[in-house]
Amino acid sequence: MSQELFDPTPEAQMLRSMVRDFARSEVEPQAERSDQKQELNLPLFRRLGELGLLGITVPAEDGGSGMDTTAAVIAHHELSKVDPGFCLAYLAHSMLFVNNFYYCSNAEQRSRYLDKVLSGEWVAGMGMTEPGYGTDVLGMTTTAVRSGAKYILNGTKTFITNGPDGHCFLVYAKVDGRLTSFIVDRSCPGFSTGGPMHKMGMRASTMSELVFEACEVPAENRLGAEGQGVTHMMRNLEIERLTLAAMSLGIADRCLDIMINYAGQRLSFGKPIAEYGQIQRFIGESYAETEAARCLIYNVARSVGPDRRNRIGSDAAKLFAAPVAKNVADRTMQVLGGNGYCTEFPVERLFRDAKLMEIGGGTLESHQKNLTRDLLKARSS
View 1 (tube, rainbow, N blue to C red):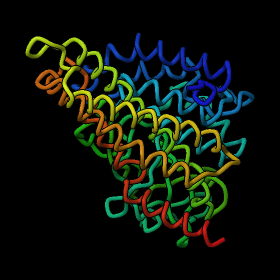
View 2 (view 1 turned 30 degrees about the horizontal axis):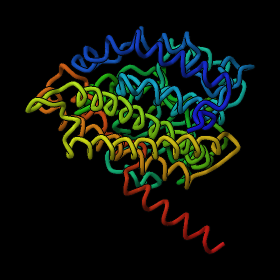
View 3 (view 1 turned 60 degrees about the vertical axis):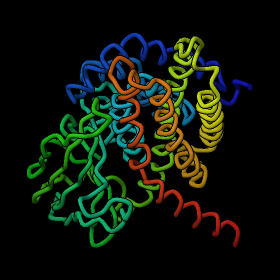
Protein backbone atom coordinates (compact mmCIF):
# COMPACT_ATOMS: atom_id res chain seq x y z
CA MET A 1 0.00 0.00 0.00
CA SER A 2 1.41 3.40 -0.99
CA GLN A 3 2.53 5.61 1.89
CA GLU A 4 1.63 8.70 -0.13
CA LEU A 5 -1.88 8.65 1.33
CA PHE A 6 -0.66 8.49 4.93
CA ASP A 7 2.59 10.49 4.72
CA PRO A 8 2.04 12.63 1.61
CA THR A 9 5.06 14.92 2.06
CA PRO A 10 8.55 14.79 3.59
CA GLU A 11 7.24 17.13 6.29
CA ALA A 12 4.46 14.67 7.14
CA GLN A 13 7.00 11.85 7.36
CA MET A 14 9.20 13.86 9.71
CA LEU A 15 6.18 14.81 11.81
CA ARG A 16 5.12 11.18 12.22
CA SER A 17 8.64 10.15 13.19
CA MET A 18 8.92 12.99 15.71
CA VAL A 19 5.54 12.35 17.34
CA ARG A 20 6.11 8.60 17.41
CA ASP A 21 9.49 9.01 19.14
CA PHE A 22 8.03 11.50 21.63
CA ALA A 23 5.08 9.22 22.36
CA ARG A 24 7.26 6.20 23.00
CA SER A 25 10.00 7.92 25.00
CA GLU A 26 8.04 10.47 27.05
CA VAL A 27 4.31 9.79 26.93
CA GLU A 28 4.15 6.03 27.35
CA PRO A 29 6.25 5.82 30.55
CA GLN A 30 3.76 8.00 32.42
CA ALA A 31 0.52 6.75 30.84
CA GLU A 32 -0.46 4.17 33.46
CA ARG A 33 0.39 6.53 36.32
CA SER A 34 -1.67 9.41 34.90
CA ASP A 35 -4.59 7.06 34.31
CA GLN A 36 -4.48 5.85 37.90
CA LYS A 37 -4.13 9.36 39.35
CA GLN A 38 -6.81 10.69 36.96
CA GLU A 39 -4.88 13.85 36.22
CA LEU A 40 -3.38 15.69 33.28
CA ASN A 41 0.41 15.70 33.23
CA LEU A 42 0.88 19.45 32.79
CA PRO A 43 4.69 19.49 32.31
CA LEU A 44 4.31 16.85 29.60
CA PHE A 45 1.44 18.80 28.06
CA ARG A 46 3.70 21.84 27.76
CA ARG A 47 6.22 19.69 25.94
CA LEU A 48 3.62 19.53 23.16
CA GLY A 49 3.99 23.30 22.91
CA GLU A 50 7.77 23.05 22.69
CA LEU A 51 7.38 20.58 19.82
CA GLY A 52 5.02 22.90 17.93
CA LEU A 53 2.08 20.51 18.20
CA LEU A 54 -0.34 22.79 20.05
CA GLY A 55 -0.58 25.06 17.01
CA ILE A 56 -0.20 22.38 14.37
CA THR A 57 -2.86 23.92 12.07
CA VAL A 58 -2.03 27.58 12.79
CA PRO A 59 -0.10 29.35 9.99
CA ALA A 60 3.63 29.72 10.59
CA GLU A 61 3.50 33.50 10.28
CA ASP A 62 1.35 33.58 13.42
CA GLY A 63 3.55 31.25 15.44
CA GLY A 64 2.05 27.89 14.52
CA SER A 65 3.44 24.95 12.57
CA GLY A 66 1.53 25.83 9.40
CA MET A 67 0.43 22.25 8.71
CA ASP A 68 -2.81 20.75 7.45
CA THR A 69 -5.55 18.37 8.54
CA THR A 70 -3.49 15.33 7.57
CA ALA A 71 -0.79 16.51 9.95
CA ALA A 72 -3.34 16.85 12.75
CA VAL A 73 -4.54 13.32 12.02
CA ILE A 74 -0.96 12.01 12.18
CA ALA A 75 -0.32 13.63 15.57
CA HIS A 76 -3.51 12.25 17.13
CA HIS A 77 -2.99 8.83 15.55
CA GLU A 78 0.52 8.41 16.96
CA LEU A 79 -0.18 9.82 20.43
CA SER A 80 -3.22 7.58 20.88
CA LYS A 81 -1.16 4.45 20.34
CA VAL A 82 0.31 5.01 23.80
CA ASP A 83 -2.04 7.30 25.77
CA PRO A 84 -5.45 8.20 24.35
CA GLY A 85 -6.37 10.08 27.53
CA PHE A 86 -3.44 12.45 27.19
CA CYS A 87 -4.22 12.78 23.49
CA LEU A 88 -7.80 13.77 24.31
CA ALA A 89 -6.51 16.70 26.36
CA TYR A 90 -4.36 17.62 23.36
CA LEU A 91 -7.35 17.43 21.02
CA ALA A 92 -9.54 19.60 23.25
CA HIS A 93 -6.80 22.23 23.37
CA SER A 94 -5.37 22.16 19.85
CA MET A 95 -8.52 21.42 17.84
CA LEU A 96 -11.51 22.51 19.91
CA PHE A 97 -9.88 25.73 21.09
CA VAL A 98 -6.76 26.69 19.11
CA ASN A 99 -7.86 25.72 15.61
CA ASN A 100 -11.38 27.03 16.12
CA PHE A 101 -10.22 30.22 17.85
CA TYR A 102 -7.64 31.05 15.20
CA TYR A 103 -10.04 30.86 12.27
CA CYS A 104 -12.79 32.93 13.90
CA SER A 105 -10.71 35.52 15.81
CA ASN A 106 -9.24 38.89 14.90
CA ALA A 107 -5.67 40.14 15.25
CA GLU A 108 -6.31 41.83 18.60
CA GLN A 109 -7.77 38.67 20.11
CA ARG A 110 -4.89 36.59 18.81
CA SER A 111 -2.42 39.03 20.36
CA ARG A 112 -3.95 38.36 23.79
CA TYR A 113 -4.34 34.59 23.66
CA LEU A 114 -2.43 32.90 20.87
CA ASP A 115 1.12 32.90 22.24
CA LYS A 116 0.05 31.47 25.59
CA VAL A 117 -2.08 28.66 24.17
CA LEU A 118 0.53 27.76 21.55
CA SER A 119 3.19 27.40 24.24
CA GLY A 120 0.91 25.50 26.62
CA GLU A 121 1.28 28.12 29.34
CA TRP A 122 -2.51 28.30 29.23
CA VAL A 123 -4.48 25.08 28.84
CA ALA A 124 -7.66 25.63 26.85
CA GLY A 125 -10.89 23.88 25.90
CA MET A 126 -14.33 24.37 24.41
CA GLY A 127 -17.78 24.63 26.02
CA MET A 128 -20.66 23.31 23.94
CA THR A 129 -22.45 20.38 25.63
CA GLU A 130 -24.94 21.21 28.39
CA PRO A 131 -26.59 19.05 31.07
CA GLY A 132 -29.81 18.88 29.05
CA TYR A 133 -28.39 19.24 25.53
CA GLY A 134 -25.79 17.01 23.91
CA THR A 135 -26.45 15.95 20.34
CA ASP A 136 -29.26 18.53 20.23
CA VAL A 137 -26.63 21.24 20.45
CA LEU A 138 -28.76 23.98 18.89
CA GLY A 139 -31.20 23.57 21.77
CA MET A 140 -28.61 24.83 24.28
CA THR A 141 -29.90 27.25 26.89
CA THR A 142 -26.77 29.20 27.90
CA THR A 143 -27.48 32.85 27.18
CA ALA A 144 -25.45 36.02 26.69
CA VAL A 145 -26.95 39.48 27.03
CA ARG A 146 -25.13 42.64 25.94
CA SER A 147 -24.64 45.15 28.76
CA GLY A 148 -22.53 48.10 27.70
CA ALA A 149 -18.93 47.00 27.13
CA LYS A 150 -19.57 43.42 28.22
CA TYR A 151 -21.86 40.42 27.86
CA ILE A 152 -23.52 38.69 30.81
CA LEU A 153 -23.47 34.90 30.43
CA ASN A 154 -25.70 32.51 32.36
CA GLY A 155 -25.75 28.75 32.03
CA THR A 156 -23.76 25.55 32.51
CA LYS A 157 -21.64 23.44 30.19
CA THR A 158 -20.84 19.84 31.09
CA PHE A 159 -18.43 17.02 30.19
CA ILE A 160 -15.81 19.65 29.29
CA THR A 161 -12.37 18.17 28.68
CA ASN A 162 -9.62 20.23 30.33
CA GLY A 163 -12.22 21.98 32.49
CA PRO A 164 -10.33 21.70 35.80
CA ASP A 165 -6.96 22.65 34.24
CA GLY A 166 -8.06 25.14 31.61
CA HIS A 167 -7.47 28.88 31.73
CA CYS A 168 -9.58 29.83 28.71
CA PHE A 169 -12.48 28.30 26.80
CA LEU A 170 -14.29 28.90 23.55
CA VAL A 171 -17.89 29.00 24.71
CA TYR A 172 -21.12 28.96 22.70
CA ALA A 173 -24.08 30.94 24.03
CA LYS A 174 -27.26 32.39 22.57
CA VAL A 175 -27.64 36.13 22.05
CA ASP A 176 -31.30 36.86 21.31
CA GLY A 177 -31.65 33.24 20.26
CA ARG A 178 -28.64 33.34 17.90
CA LEU A 179 -25.67 31.10 18.60
CA THR A 180 -22.57 33.22 19.28
CA SER A 181 -18.96 32.38 20.20
CA PHE A 182 -17.03 33.87 23.12
CA ILE A 183 -13.68 33.48 24.81
CA VAL A 184 -14.19 33.05 28.54
CA ASP A 185 -11.21 32.84 30.89
CA ARG A 186 -10.50 32.60 34.59
CA SER A 187 -10.37 36.40 34.94
CA CYS A 188 -14.07 36.77 34.05
CA PRO A 189 -16.18 37.46 37.18
CA GLY A 190 -18.91 34.89 37.63
CA PHE A 191 -17.05 32.07 35.86
CA SER A 192 -16.13 28.89 37.71
CA THR A 193 -15.52 25.22 37.06
CA GLY A 194 -16.94 22.30 38.97
CA GLY A 195 -14.92 19.57 40.59
CA PRO A 196 -13.30 16.88 38.43
CA MET A 197 -15.78 14.39 36.97
CA HIS A 198 -14.63 10.80 37.37
CA LYS A 199 -14.64 8.74 34.20
CA MET A 200 -14.49 5.14 33.02
CA GLY A 201 -11.66 5.91 30.62
CA MET A 202 -9.59 8.73 29.17
CA ARG A 203 -8.50 9.41 32.74
CA ALA A 204 -5.25 11.13 31.77
CA SER A 205 -7.40 14.10 30.75
CA THR A 206 -9.60 15.92 33.22
CA MET A 207 -13.24 16.88 32.84
CA SER A 208 -15.66 19.18 34.66
CA GLU A 209 -18.58 21.55 34.29
CA LEU A 210 -18.16 25.18 33.29
CA VAL A 211 -20.50 27.41 35.28
CA PHE A 212 -21.57 30.93 34.28
CA GLU A 213 -23.42 32.86 36.97
CA ALA A 214 -23.95 36.40 35.71
CA CYS A 215 -20.51 35.94 34.18
CA GLU A 216 -19.05 39.17 32.83
CA VAL A 217 -17.27 38.69 29.49
CA PRO A 218 -15.69 41.72 27.78
CA ALA A 219 -17.36 42.53 24.47
CA GLU A 220 -13.96 42.29 22.79
CA ASN A 221 -14.01 38.58 23.68
CA ARG A 222 -16.86 37.90 21.29
CA LEU A 223 -15.58 35.91 18.31
CA GLY A 224 -16.96 37.24 15.05
CA ALA A 225 -20.42 38.78 14.90
CA GLU A 226 -23.45 37.83 16.92
CA GLY A 227 -25.07 34.78 15.38
CA GLN A 228 -21.91 33.39 13.72
CA GLY A 229 -21.48 30.62 16.27
CA VAL A 230 -23.14 27.99 14.10
CA THR A 231 -20.65 28.66 11.30
CA HIS A 232 -17.71 28.43 13.70
CA MET A 233 -19.03 25.23 15.24
CA MET A 234 -19.80 23.41 12.01
CA ARG A 235 -16.49 24.33 10.39
CA ASN A 236 -14.55 22.98 13.36
CA LEU A 237 -16.62 19.82 13.84
CA GLU A 238 -15.09 18.24 10.76
CA ILE A 239 -11.48 18.38 11.92
CA GLU A 240 -12.64 17.40 15.42
CA ARG A 241 -14.31 14.27 14.11
CA LEU A 242 -11.35 13.36 11.93
CA THR A 243 -8.90 13.68 14.80
CA LEU A 244 -11.22 11.62 17.03
CA ALA A 245 -11.30 9.02 14.25
CA ALA A 246 -7.50 9.15 14.19
CA MET A 247 -7.49 8.49 17.93
CA SER A 248 -9.66 5.43 17.30
CA LEU A 249 -7.15 4.27 14.70
CA GLY A 250 -4.29 4.70 17.16
CA ILE A 251 -6.08 2.55 19.73
CA ALA A 252 -6.82 -0.14 17.14
CA ASP A 253 -3.24 -0.11 15.81
CA ARG A 254 -1.73 -0.59 19.27
CA CYS A 255 -4.18 -3.31 20.29
CA LEU A 256 -3.67 -5.19 17.02
CA ASP A 257 0.09 -5.10 17.52
CA ILE A 258 -0.28 -6.48 21.05
CA MET A 259 -2.71 -9.18 19.84
CA ILE A 260 -0.45 -10.42 17.06
CA ASN A 261 2.68 -10.53 19.22
CA TYR A 262 0.92 -12.30 22.07
CA ALA A 263 -0.77 -14.85 19.81
CA GLY A 264 2.57 -15.77 18.27
CA GLN A 265 4.23 -16.34 21.64
CA ARG A 266 1.53 -17.75 23.92
CA LEU A 267 1.42 -21.55 23.93
CA SER A 268 -1.67 -23.63 24.50
CA PHE A 269 -1.70 -27.43 24.23
CA GLY A 270 1.84 -27.26 22.94
CA LYS A 271 1.44 -24.76 20.12
CA PRO A 272 1.08 -20.99 19.66
CA ILE A 273 -2.52 -19.88 20.00
CA ALA A 274 -2.13 -18.13 16.63
CA GLU A 275 -2.58 -21.57 15.08
CA TYR A 276 -6.17 -21.80 16.32
CA GLY A 277 -8.93 -20.72 13.98
CA GLN A 278 -10.77 -18.48 16.42
CA ILE A 279 -7.62 -16.49 17.16
CA GLN A 280 -6.96 -16.22 13.44
CA ARG A 281 -10.45 -14.81 12.99
CA PHE A 282 -9.82 -12.17 15.67
CA ILE A 283 -6.53 -11.15 14.07
CA GLY A 284 -7.74 -11.24 10.47
CA GLU A 285 -10.91 -9.24 11.06
CA SER A 286 -9.11 -6.75 13.26
CA TYR A 287 -6.43 -6.16 10.65
CA ALA A 288 -8.94 -5.72 7.83
CA GLU A 289 -11.09 -3.27 9.81
CA THR A 290 -8.08 -1.27 10.99
CA GLU A 291 -6.69 -0.92 7.48
CA ALA A 292 -10.08 0.12 6.15
CA ALA A 293 -10.33 2.78 8.86
CA ARG A 294 -6.83 4.00 8.08
CA CYS A 295 -7.59 4.48 4.38
CA LEU A 296 -10.92 6.22 5.02
CA ILE A 297 -9.54 8.63 7.63
CA TYR A 298 -6.48 9.70 5.69
CA ASN A 299 -8.38 9.97 2.42
CA VAL A 300 -11.00 12.27 3.97
CA ALA A 301 -8.31 14.34 5.72
CA ARG A 302 -7.03 15.51 2.33
CA SER A 303 -10.39 17.16 1.63
CA VAL A 304 -10.84 19.07 4.91
CA GLY A 305 -9.36 22.45 5.77
CA PRO A 306 -10.27 26.01 6.76
CA ASP A 307 -11.74 26.60 3.30
CA ARG A 308 -12.65 23.02 2.39
CA ARG A 309 -15.61 21.12 3.75
CA ASN A 310 -16.43 17.42 3.73
CA ARG A 311 -19.02 16.77 6.39
CA ILE A 312 -20.11 13.50 4.81
CA GLY A 313 -16.55 12.25 4.85
CA SER A 314 -15.76 13.29 8.41
CA ASP A 315 -18.99 11.79 9.76
CA ALA A 316 -18.33 8.56 7.88
CA ALA A 317 -14.74 8.36 9.14
CA LYS A 318 -15.70 8.66 12.80
CA LEU A 319 -18.79 6.46 12.43
CA PHE A 320 -16.63 3.66 11.02
CA ALA A 321 -13.46 4.09 13.07
CA ALA A 322 -14.96 4.40 16.55
CA PRO A 323 -16.44 0.87 16.69
CA VAL A 324 -13.23 -0.48 15.14
CA ALA A 325 -11.26 0.80 18.14
CA LYS A 326 -13.67 -0.77 20.62
CA ASN A 327 -13.98 -4.06 18.74
CA VAL A 328 -10.24 -4.52 18.23
CA ALA A 329 -9.58 -3.70 21.89
CA ASP A 330 -12.26 -6.20 22.91
CA ARG A 331 -10.81 -8.95 20.72
CA THR A 332 -7.33 -8.24 22.00
CA MET A 333 -8.52 -8.60 25.58
CA GLN A 334 -10.16 -11.90 24.64
CA VAL A 335 -6.95 -13.20 23.06
CA LEU A 336 -4.89 -12.19 26.10
CA GLY A 337 -7.43 -13.60 28.54
CA GLY A 338 -6.55 -12.82 32.14
CA ASN A 339 -3.43 -10.95 31.05
CA GLY A 340 -5.56 -8.56 29.04
CA TYR A 341 -7.90 -7.94 31.95
CA CYS A 342 -5.04 -7.01 34.27
CA THR A 343 -2.87 -3.91 34.08
CA GLU A 344 0.37 -5.68 33.10
CA PHE A 345 -0.62 -4.95 29.50
CA PRO A 346 -2.15 -1.62 28.42
CA VAL A 347 -5.13 -3.37 26.82
CA GLU A 348 -7.55 -2.86 29.70
CA ARG A 349 -6.80 0.89 29.66
CA LEU A 350 -7.14 1.10 25.89
CA PHE A 351 -10.40 -0.86 26.11
CA ARG A 352 -11.81 1.65 28.60
CA ASP A 353 -10.56 4.58 26.55
CA ALA A 354 -12.04 3.26 23.31
CA LYS A 355 -15.67 3.50 24.43
CA LEU A 356 -15.62 7.30 24.45
CA MET A 357 -15.01 7.32 20.70
CA GLU A 358 -18.59 6.13 20.17
CA ILE A 359 -19.96 8.99 22.31
CA GLY A 360 -17.71 12.07 22.30
CA GLY A 361 -17.62 14.54 19.43
CA GLY A 362 -20.94 13.18 18.20
CA THR A 363 -22.58 9.85 19.01
CA LEU A 364 -22.70 7.08 16.44
CA GLU A 365 -26.41 7.78 16.12
CA SER A 366 -25.79 11.44 15.31
CA HIS A 367 -23.39 10.47 12.53
CA GLN A 368 -25.96 8.08 11.10
CA LYS A 369 -28.55 10.86 11.16
CA ASN A 370 -26.17 13.39 9.58
CA LEU A 371 -25.08 11.02 6.84
CA THR A 372 -28.63 10.06 5.92
CA ARG A 373 -29.73 13.70 5.75
CA ASP A 374 -26.71 14.86 3.76
CA LEU A 375 -26.77 11.93 1.33
CA LEU A 376 -30.47 12.48 0.64
CA LYS A 377 -29.81 16.16 0.08
CA ALA A 378 -26.94 15.39 -2.30
CA ARG A 379 -29.11 12.91 -4.22
CA SER A 380 -31.90 15.43 -4.72
CA SER A 381 -29.70 18.34 -5.75
